[in-house]
Image 1 (tube, rainbow, N blue to C red):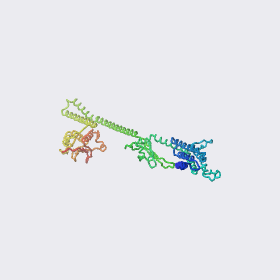
Image 2: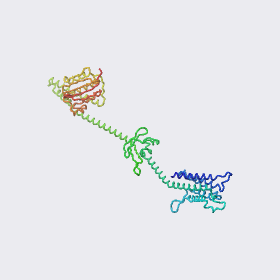
Image 3: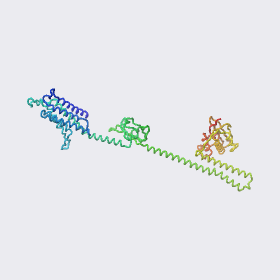
Image 4: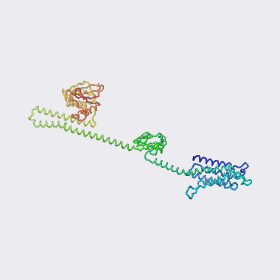
Amino acid sequence: MGRLSRLIAGCAGIAVAVCGVVSARTLDDGGPPEGYSSTPAVALIPAGIALLVQAAPISGGRAGRLRAGAAVLFALIATGLAAVALVDQPAASVATLLSGLALACFDLRLPRQDGSMPFRVADPLLLGAAVIALVALVPRLFAPAFPPGRGPDSVMSLPQAGALLVLTAGAVLARSLDQADLRQRPLVEELRDREDFAQTLLQSMNEAVMVLDANYRVIDVNRRWRELTGYADDDLARDPPPLPPPGSGGDWTIPRADGTAVPVLATMAAIPDAAGTTRGYVATCVDIAERKHAEDALTEHAAELERGNAQLASALAFKNDLTSMLTHDVAQPISSIASLAELLCADWADLPDDIRLELATKIDKNTRRLVKMMNDLQLLFRLDTGSVTARRVPAPLHEVVRTVSATMAGDDVEIAIDEDLAALIDRGHLTVVVENLLKNALTHGAPPIVVQAEPQGTTVLLVVQDSGPGVPEAVLPGIFGRFSRGAGLGLFIVRHLVEANGGTVRYEHATPQGARLLVTLERAPA
C-alpha cells in the first residue's frame, strides 16, 4: 500500500506541473490567455515538482536531508511566484501561495500544550487552498455576488482549480505517507538494529554456524564456518554438507573445499514458529581436530605402553624360565661334574682303571651336555635379537640325519630317506634342527623312532616320529615356546631356525600312538 500511495502522490505532482506548463502558455500574439495572468499557473510548476520530491521513497541519512531541502526550495519558488500575482489573480494566487507554504512547511510541527500529537503547520494551509479551489469549481453558487464583467470565470480557470485540488490531494496523501514513515521509522530502526545485532552475534561466534530453511537450503553461514570449511561467500548457494539429524549431534566430519575432512562436534537444532512448525534449522560445529590429534596421540602412547608392558612381561617370564633352567638343568651337570672330579682326585690311587674310565666318561658326558646347553642359550639370545642369518644351500637330508643319529642314538633310529633328496637350508641349521628333534624324541618318546623325508612338489617334508605317549593336549599351545615340556630350548630353536630358512614346523598325533614333528622346507633343484 505504501508504494502505491507514493506512486499516486508522485503522479499527482507530475500532473500539477504539466497542468502549470499548459496553463502558462501564451497566445500566438505573445499575450496571456484572456481573463487571467500567467503567473499563478507558472507557480504550479515548482509546486508540482515539490510534491513529486516529497513523494520520493527516500528517508533518513544524507539522501533524505537532500530530498527535504529540494522540496522546500521548489515550494518556496512556487510561493514567490504566486505572491507576485496577488493583485491580478488574488484567488488563484492565494490558493497557490497556501499550497506552496504547505509544501515548504511540510515537516514543520508545533507541540501542543496537552502533550498530544504535535500540530502540523501544513494542515490548515492545505485546507485553505482546497476551499478556494472548490469555490472556483462551483461558480454558479456565487455568480450574483460578482460585479458586471467580473464573473466566476475570472476567479481562476478551471484547469488551475483542478490542478490545485490535485495538488492538495497529493499533498494530503504525501502527508499520510510521512506520518506512516514517522510511525514506522522506529520499528524499521529497531528491526535494523536487531538484524545488525543478530548478524554481529552470528559472525562473532567461535563455533561454526550454518542457518538453513525448512527445505535444507543454506540461508547464511558465519565467518568461522567459512574458515573451517574453506568455502567462499559465492559458495553459500551450494548444497549443505551431510549433517546430523535434527535434535541430535556428536562427533562428525565436515568436508573442506580442498577435498579433506575436518572432525567436528556437530549439533542440529530445528527452529519452530509460534505454531510449532519447523521454519528452519541451525547447524553448529566445533572444531575438534586438536582434540582428535591429542586422542590419537594418547591412544598411540597407550598402545606403546601396552607393548612395553608386554615386552616387560615377556622379559620377566624369560628371566624366570632362564633362572629355572639354570637352577635345574645347568646346575645338575655342574654338580655331577664336581662330585665325580672330587671322587677321582680323592681316590685316584685306590680306584681300578675301569672305574677311572667310567668316571671320566661320565664327566665328559656331563661336560658335553653343559656345552650343548651353553650353545643353545647363545643361539637363543641371537634368535631374540634377530641376528641369526641363513645361508641356504642344497643340504643332503640322508647324510645329515645319519651323521646326527650315529652320534646320538645309534641303532635306535630308523632312517627312511632317499640319498639323493636335498633341501635348501643352512647346513649348520639343519644339523641343529635334527639334533633337537631326535633329542626330543629320545627324551620324551619311545623307540622305535623313525626319520623319513619325501618330496612334495617344490617342497620337502621331513618327519620325526616316536612311539611314546605323545604330547598332552594342555601342552600343545606352547609346544614351540621357550623351555617347553621341561626339555630346555629344543623345539623353540627348531621353530626359529626352520622359519629363518623359509620353512614351517608343526605337530601331529601319531597313529596308534606317539608324536610326529613335521618340518616343511624348500626342495633343492636336482
